[in-house]
Length: 89
Image (cartoon, rainbow, N blue to C red; front, side, top):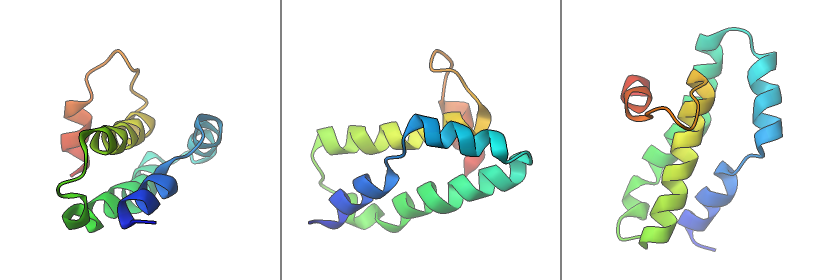
């Protein structure tokens, strides 16, 4: 199994579990730090491995990144995600 496949498997979380975790963590800063540490750090760490990946796998990773940002900032799917992603960095 390749490192990119491992990353995809690690980053997929069920929506019910993530909602329960989001509501149990009342401090937004702690929750944001947790998501950045678990999701975005893995994406940054594997950045060189992800180079040259097929477009369908890149789209799946983009979905995971967007879902994490939406979870942190409680953004609906109909709202723009770009401002949230830039504020996380």
